[in-house]
Image (cartoon, rainbow, N blue to C red; front, side, top):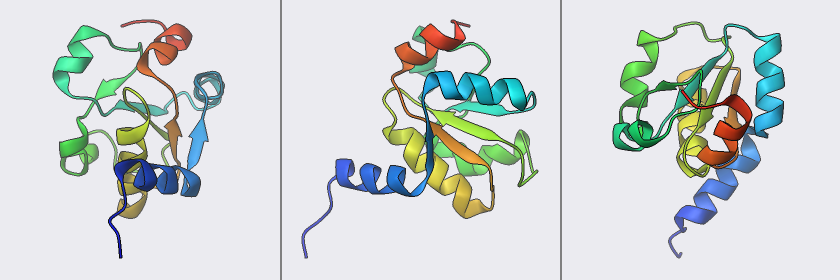
Length: 119
């Protein structure tokens, strides 16, 4: 048995979860005003550029910190990162925790900023 690459793991994870374009994410947010948009990049990355309307919970502490933001399993949660890989792994983890309405915003951070504006 050979080891899977990160790219293979991310691709498999994305295939099993709901992925959105930045445009679709913005439209979904207009329907769900309480949607939580989580940026799972590291704080240093967020300090350089940050999409408007996002909160930063780094991927490494997401499972420990998410309940500070919501304990509602039906709350709409959108997850993004720099390119979509960490967001996919984070969304899978949130789903395993019991959150039922989790989507990946599958784009670069710059594409998201183009749609949402910069914070």
